[in-house]
Image 1 (cartoon, rainbow, N blue to C red):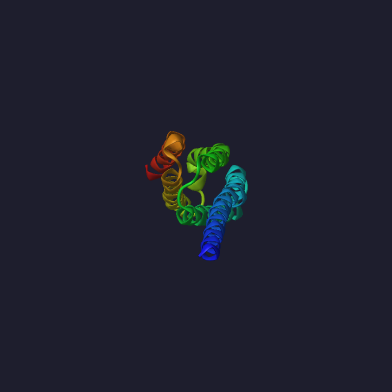
Image 2 (image 1 turned 90 degrees about the vertical axis):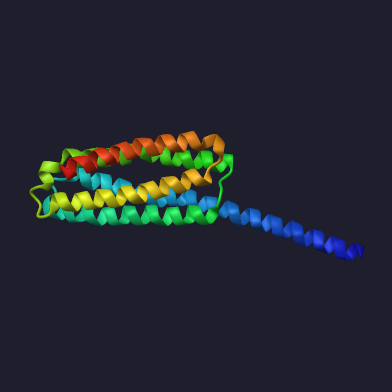
Length: 180
């Protein structure tokens, strides 16, 4: 009886340790998604947007491709967040800090696109294409931030809401510019 109890205790302890390692690995996956996928995708997008209109049609095509990559990175990270479940306070703080570091790049990209409306008019279907891309990336960004908000502890939810409000305002402004 004692041997069975010890065996069950060891099995339960091993299972709990394994489960903790899996959750930690998932949080690390989310952190890596943000720093190694979303960050580089948006940096490339921002660089290409800043290079337009002097980059011409070739730059416009690169921007369209960059949007696709940025949306894919956001969608993949959203799926990883949902499969991870809730974040602890420390993990959530790190994730929010990683996102906050990217906010200037997000804002710069969207604001620069807003300022480039006239230049996109010189590209066939340029304005319409950018409007579609802005709406698509805004939807993916919103789902991503909603997933972060759902996974973070209540203590940190105001930080997540502040980031979402800031980015939503920027996207709404750019979408309104291209909708007019």
